Structures are given as C-alpha cells and as structure tokens.
Length: 269
Image (tube, rainbow, N blue to C red; front, side, top):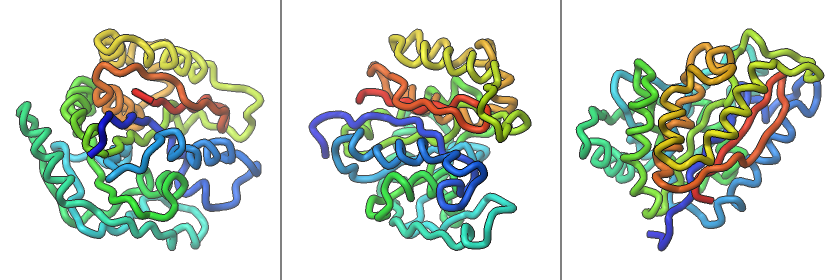
C-alpha cells in the first residue's frame, strides 16, 4: 500500500521494436527512448505492480491477462530476426487481475479473464525501456471493441482506487497514429498532427469534467480524425484520464517523429 495515489501515465510506445534495432535515420527514436527511461524517476516510487492498457488489444469486453508468467506476443512484422527473440520475463499477477475484475464489475461493466494471450509489443517494448529489469509484475488490460470513448473513460474511473494500492496505471499508445502519413523527413510536420497535439496539450490540464467532455468528443477536435483514422492508439489516453479522477494532467514529453508530433502525458504527478 502507498499513502498517496500514484500518478497515471499515457506513454507513446514507438513503432514495433524500434528502441531495440537500428533505424534510418539514426536517432529517430532516441529522444522518446530517453524519456521512457526517465519514467521511474518521474513516478518517484517503485510500483507494486503495473497495469497496462495497450492500443494493440481489443476484445468483446474489457479483458485481463491473468497469467502468472505471461509470454510475449511478437505482434509486428518485417523487423530484424533478433527482435523476435526479445525477452521480458516479468511475472503476472492473478491477484491484481482479480482485483481489477472486481473494480470493473462494481459499476456493471462486463469483464473477462484470459490465460493464454501474451503481452503485446505495446506493453513489453516500452516496459523494457522503463523497467528493464522486469522485476515489477505486469497485468495487461484490453480495450473494448466498438472503441467508444465514454466506455474507456468510465473504465479508467473504475480503476482509480488502484493508484492508492501501489499500482501504476499506464496507457500505451501514440498521440498521433496515421501510418499513411508517417514520413522519414521530419523537416515538414503534418499540420493535422500539430493541430491535434495542441488540442490535447490544452485539453489534458482542464478540470476533470471538462477534460472528459472534450476527450469524449475528440473526433471533432482540430486534426482529430486525420491524426487517428482509427482510435485504438488514442483510447489508452482516455483510460488514463479517467483513472486520474480529479487530478490535473500535463504534457510530460513532446517529440517530432516521422513527420508527426508525439506526446506523453502524466496525471497527478
């Protein structure tokens, strides 16, 4: 147990195994990697466990990986052979999965446990940078098919008590995820990426009710749908914002990557 709530994070997880391979141009992901390495210091205390919502797992209902020793799911393609041998032997936590199941069930949400799926790269790739010793138990929680922003804000609100129980809640996605517009030259930024990032930067620090109202209607934001043709990489931010409860959020990191602006956010820290 902790005597105060842990912060909540939304982190960009990069492109596939980008932090563990050569990339052209060199240094593309170096600033993001450096920031991810700073996360334990930003959090300030060692979490009892990590609960991660990744943009790479959708299920019919909110679903938890409840394995004692979850394997890895190398859900990327076309990368160097060694990236399919990366390891992250963190323990799971069936007890935390059961606790989350109970919290989500209290307001009547449908929730399921599963015991076979591995941790996807939206989980193990950033965690290998943030907590490289793999010595903090990890539970992954899915998105819900349909990708309703209100559902994911509500799910986040239900998770808020975990913060006082030593659990670090991490939304893992990308603040901009239009793969058709990524480019190798950062000299020219996608104007929709710039506009949407500015909207997010203005939205996250707002009082909780206004913040949630704006996030629920994110598709009407400047550059919103262009930045996210499909919203699975944005909704982990909604979960984080919901779990923040009344705590203030702020932009913790900003980078220029592949012609886009990418940002991370922290709530309550």
